[in-house]
Length: 375
Image (tube, rainbow, N blue to C red; front, side, top):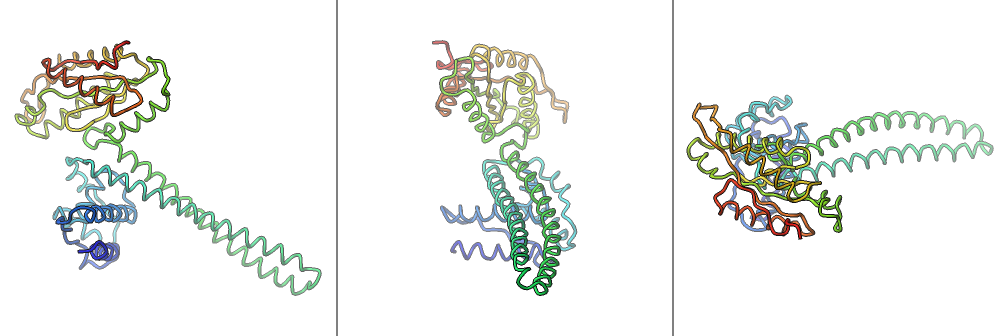
């Protein structure tokens, strides 16, 4: 099936979902037997459809809202389809509170982050359209003023006719100005709402849904800012340190206590690292049970000491599964750190190699990459 043939029916369905026909309010599932570039184009269109749905129904572009709407438009979750269809048929504002709670345990993967980034781009485009409309209305008012000036210049040649023309033109100017003022106020409110939505979308695209920490995308942005601030010729103390921290034997937690308990451990460790390392560090979830840390304004040994103290304090604690009362026991992590140089990929690879050595040496330890050691 061609991309045009595949996309056209969906655009038709989108238009009817926003209307009042309840007979077509439940979308059929979107088939996934599509490969290669065709599937990428279909997914890109789906991202746009989700953005249109959120925008039309004035829903904040949060990760969970995105997942709810995505599940509805694809038909992948019948419970979501059954819940949303009558809301659309009633023409009342959508209320996704219970659906958000129902889907709150799901995680936004890389596809979700990519979709939110696409939504942010879409919102930015709409904001630009609103501002362009505002410019057009101002230009229209200016043209009326110019026409009025020209009419006044003909006053000596034809006083009566010109005065009549000016009176009519003035009435038009007053009427148009009032319409312009109303439209500008509306556009300004819409622009502010879109700007807020854009900020939420960008934040959501760079934040891990489970832990609330920056995700890999957000971490990369922080690294870019650190490199721009320090510059390539910065002194060693002004250079940043990157570290990768991996929870030891995390699979055991999931196997013994279940994935919900594992998720709570991930949230706890992420929050713990952020609190222990303080404002000098940016802690992000790098994927799975691995966390990435960016430390600025500290030497490599100071950064290593910070991580090691956090590791030691955590290892001294014993956790309990509050859902069941069953002890989880000690949670430890291993870490590797490296100096952030010109190549971010090289720095992360060096930190990962140091992390591997820490694991190989018995876990529950912090190792420093050669590039972080004093020359």
